[in-house]
Image (cartoon, rainbow, N blue to C red; front, side, top):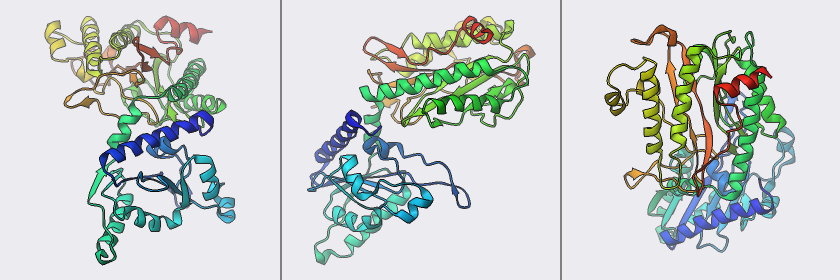
Length: 440
């Protein structure tokens, strides 16, 4: 992602934060850390994944680094990273290094992370406000320890910061509306995810295992330069589909069952997120078809509300009404339809939300309310719409023919000036489309 016009994106984002800092205080400072390597077991680590906020501002994909933004400094954008080390790099991989980081990242100053405390001591001296992510306790301890040192030496003219502010809300508001360059990356992540789901539909048949389906999906990701899934891939067959975050993916696929796949590629940091539910044998039973079409109608009802100025709650109301009407028609919900709709009677069958923001994180940052009101959609926002119905075995007061069925349908959409763009509509979704695709 760190090339030509995209590199300018990072500079633009940092410039915006510097502007906010200047407006906040004449001597405000922001400190944003990278992610660190996480131990898997003993001396082996999980594959490294950069902190999303740090990546959003730098495009730098190494651990053990720190970004400092100080608008009052002669070098307002400072980045501290691991220095080049031939010995360490033989064991752990290449590093950009301090000198090349200065050339490559478009910052004003780079230094070794080994010397960062000395630099931070000078930067914090006289700073009035320090903005940093409050969900990073190790950074907080480091900054407060330096502030204690400053307070301990007032006779030397040192002055410790007097206000500590969480920078996360600023960054969340920046990230919630995507730039044109970000949207192109997200469309690409969506295209890869679409191809993976279509491949999985072709692969599935009775006797295969859920983990084999996941392997097909991950193979398609890798072959299209998406090095990892954006989250733990869910391949839940039969009643496993009723477990919302089922990732064991260990069961055999059985004739007559449905398979729910929730999977998305991560491409250059950005997430795809698609869910489809379809029959293992390629043909829906009459009951499966009826229940599936209830969920499909609910998703379309929600999609129809999407436009600038609308909000997630309006989409939820539309989906909830369609789910309630469909469940009532099938006899799963009983009683007066108007009262059922008013009481959100569908809720026991769909305990999760209708969707979420999507971006560098699969459940991306950004609030759903502003000043106590539902946050209005704006062009450039990206979200998922994913209604579902889940009826685990043993569900009381529901005919047993529905037991063990879990259905979810999820697409990734961009709010546009005219309404919305469905980036993932290329995966077969109607009963007819699914059966036709699987039969080819």
